[in-house]
Length: 330
Image 1 (cartoon, rainbow, N blue to C red):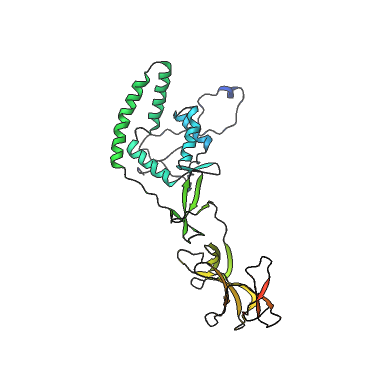
Image 2: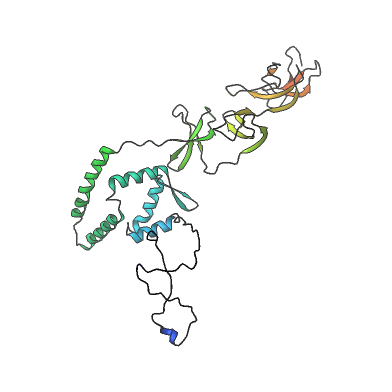
């Protein structure tokens, strides 16, 4: 049993104090007299599992309190310090708590590796004490600066030789650029995160970014590749259906928008379609068996003269309809 540590808890009265006049009924567990190597009898073995909880995340108040306890900075620098780590993107603030970012992790690791002596809280606190001594006249500020800068310059030159440029990978999203069709990426700007097109500078499209993605609209259409309900996504040319198991399944479909109009050639359904460049047109759902197409939207109304379908007049702002038959005078 030498590999295990045992702990005994008990309570023994050392000084009765007020208990002389006000007795307190409390069960005391006396400590037995034991020495190392004594044999003891096991009465009962209780198995119990405990889980430790991680420390609470810092918020602005707890971070300032920690800086005060460690002697880091002074009241005039607390607020600028918090603003700096936020503005530089080292941390993000979510629900009044700080979360370290990827760039924050990288910067911290580099600082610890190359400037460990200078970011140590003991060094910072000692420097604060020296600054206080400058105020009282016990130190000359030039001596303190010269002393600190000498070692810092050596560390800076060494780090400059060893640290290579760190490239952060862009975070690709499912949001499609509505100008060129590429997947937008997350960028960090002066006012936080935003979405940008990866084809910059050819495409300079940007969008607002939200950490809480919109809940996808689930359709009744089943993905024929993996058997799950497809979801509605927004693309360059409008909404489309995509498999929710992306990127494992990259199946996509157009959303079929029926007009309620029968095809004049085969009596199929006329649906809305788009060209590869995104231009809207109308065709038969029986394509390629039926090649009916129209740039103008057909309506259920028929021409009084020739009986052909009418279409919306694109040149009219009043929603007027005209006969689709070019030879008809109507």
